[in-house]
Image: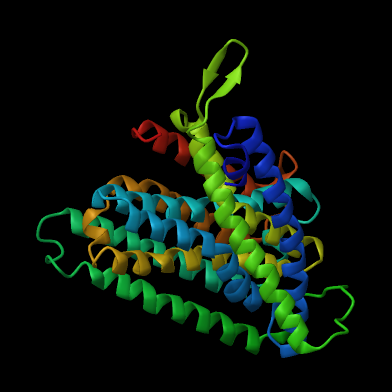
Length: 356
């Protein structure tokens, strides 16, 4: 961290200041990334939804790839390494869906799920299917004889193939339904295509770098004592620490999604959410290769809690996209209310299962 490099031993206050500085870079770069993505779609004819599913989702999820991959490579205990990778990826999938609730609260009259096109169901369902394959792999490898030893990699192979199938299906749908694309009032881009691509790449690089930076700050904050009144406490010793780290690593998705939604690119925003979840699950095969094809063998069934939570939340989101209810609960749609309740209940169950 920068504070450690300048001041030596970092304090909680300095780390929080560094966190705010890093978050401001994410906000600036994320806002521009969404705008550049929209302009690229206009120039190339690609839909905003597909830009969100592939490009924005890939960029905002690269920090998860780095943190999960480094956990697998750096942690000597293979069981702990596998649990860190699964927990990070499944937890990020569930947290990404909470962004829908956040947007519904910030803009009560514009429910995100009610404005998205039907093509979002393809990406969401594909993500749920891939999560299901990962969960089945965890269960199957934990029961003797269910999956022959040495064949655990099959689940990773299915997930990898599924990613490309989902991306292809999304592209095909968007091509076949040009009438469902976003109507954005953003002024057209006046520069060259090469310069636009360069700006998009630069904004993406800032997002990736700051995402990794935020993860490091979050890890440091978990081990630095906070002084409150006459006592001290540490985030790493509480469940709040886990939630804070999840927020830190998911901030790029939050910023890019909110920026896309504010400019009217609703399907780009939804594509980023569901596409990020698809990309997160697709990171599992990468981690599996890093662990010698034994990721599922070393992972514990406790990881099924966030996996099942993400699957249920995705199902609720699909219901909201399909049924589009008008009834609201506490100024938000019932689908957003259910998403929030499922997430809170899931986190309580995860907490009571023994992990902090």
